[in-house]
Image (cartoon, rainbow, N blue to C red; front, side, top):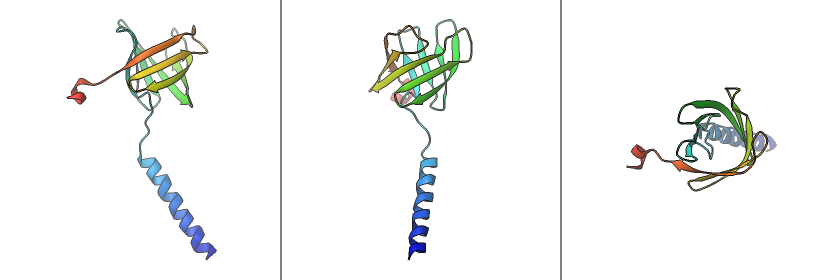
Length: 117
């Protein structure tokens, strides 16, 4: 009786792990977010992204822990930063933390026009 119960629990655990692995990783930041028409941030949902400026792009890696966003720029001329963030619909709110000048920033989700048709 105990052996069959353990076997059943093991099978359930394997199914849960398989489903979790097949679900694909997404995060709330995936996509492109516009700040002011000349500055945007792009997140690939896999931990890489870029700050997109008119004259240059700055690649970075990022990590999300709870409501904290950690950005590590590849180019050392851009300052690594930590933000508290929240997403409400098509609005991303970043609150400056370590490595920033502080302040609150509101970005708007950029939708792919092809996907919207």
